[in-house]
Image 1 (cartoon, rainbow, N blue to C red):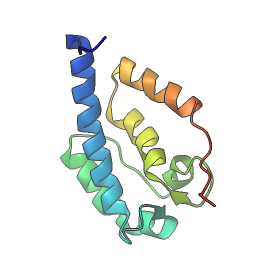
Image 2 (cartoon, one colour):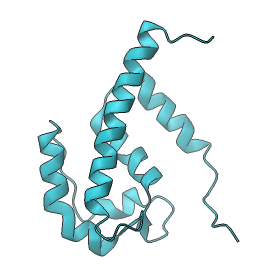
Image 3 (cartoon, one colour):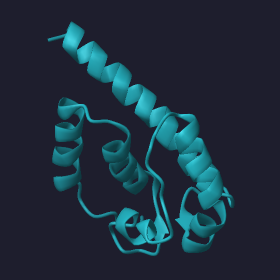
Length: 115
């Protein structure tokens, strides 16, 4: 329907808050401002990323070894959508939001650069 229910509104607010946090983390990591994060950028920005996560009340800490897990397509760079899928699982325990994230991740076609 055309209306957001109370339950959907709560989920929307959680998703919006998480999206803003994830975008902030991604922006910190992407020091070259090329909309992707290299392994070198990730390593150099880890302290700041973890500080920002703590500032937002998260008890997770990321490390160098998380790079490969976040870079789910194995392209050697973390893209924003990969960061969203990884950090959404880390920042929320909302079952509806997590279920939707998993479904979207399963049905997302592999990225192909425009020719």
